[in-house]
Length: 392
Image (cartoon, rainbow, N blue to C red; front, top):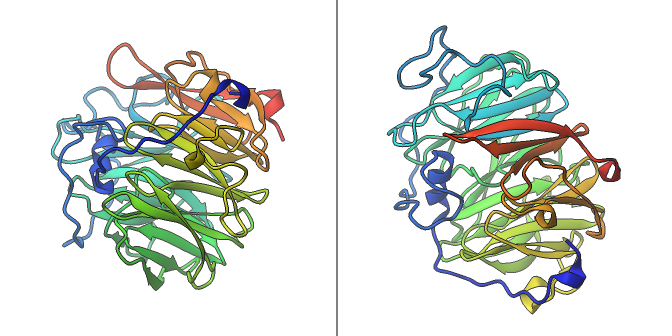
C-alpha cells in the first residue's frame, strides 16, 4: 500500500456495540464487529472461579469428535490463534461447536518446523491472549457468560502453576492486548480497571479505576518503560492514554472514537500504533509515544499516508522483529505488509498463499503464521519464513 494511490479517507462511525458482544467472535458465532453477533453480556463480577480443565486421555462428545490432533498443520481448526514467545510457539483453537452453550478450547505448544504438538491442555473457556512473563505463561480466558480468568501455566508442560489461584476478570479482553509487561509489573486491562500484578508471584497489588470505561486494552515497549492503554465507553467514545508504568497514573491522553477500545501496539521507535474499528470500516494510525500527538496528518483529518492506513474493521497493526506489521484478512498485498516502525514506510508485502482470503495470526522469530480457510469448517494454519525485506 502506497500513500499516493489511496485517495482521501475519513473514518465513518456506526452505532456502537459493546465490547463484551465481541465474545461471540471467539465462540465462532460471528466475525469481528459484524451485525448479528447477538445481545451484549451484562457487566458483572464473576460469581465463581473458572477452573482450567486438564487434557483428558480420550476426547469427549462435547470437544473432539475425531482422534486427538497430533500435528497442528494437518487439520482445519476453528478460530485458530498463534503466539510466538522465547519459550516456544503456542496455538489455541476452539473445540466446542459454534452453537454450544459453553466454550471449550485447546492450547498447545508446537514444534514450528513439523507442526507436531509437544504439550497441550484443554481449557473450559475461550482462550484470549497468551504471553510469557517472568518464566510463566499467562493466559487470558473468558467463558460464554463473559466472565474471565487469568491463568498461570508452566510454559513447557502447560500444567497449571502450583500454589497460585487464577485471577478473576470482569471484562476479559479477547480482541486486543489484555496483558503488558511494564515497570517490572504485569498489567492487565480489565474493562474499567487496570490491574497491576507482582512478578513472579502474580498477586494483584493495585487496581487503577478508569471511570466510565466499558472496554480497554494495554501495551508497552520492549524495555517496559512506557505503558499505553486504549479505552472506550459504551457509546464508542474513548482515548489513547500514556500511564506511569509503576503506578498507572495518567500522564497523557488523546481522544478517539470508534465502537470499542482502540487496539494499541508498541511503542516502538517513538511511535504507538493504533487500530480503530468504527463499525463500517477501520483504520490504523500512528501517534508519538512521548505526548500521544498524531504522527503526521491524522486519519480524522481525511489524510491517508504511511501512518494512516484505512481498511475494514479487521485491520490491525502489530509489532514484531523490530518492525510494524499491518494486516487484514481479505486485505490482499495492500493490507498485509511489513513497514519501518518509526516511519510506516512500506518495506514488502507478506507472502500468503491466498492474499485475498488468508489471515495473518502471528509473526515472530523470523516466521509468519497465517490461517487459510478450508473448504469445510475452520482454517488450516500455515507458516512461512519472513521475507528478506522484512528482516530488520
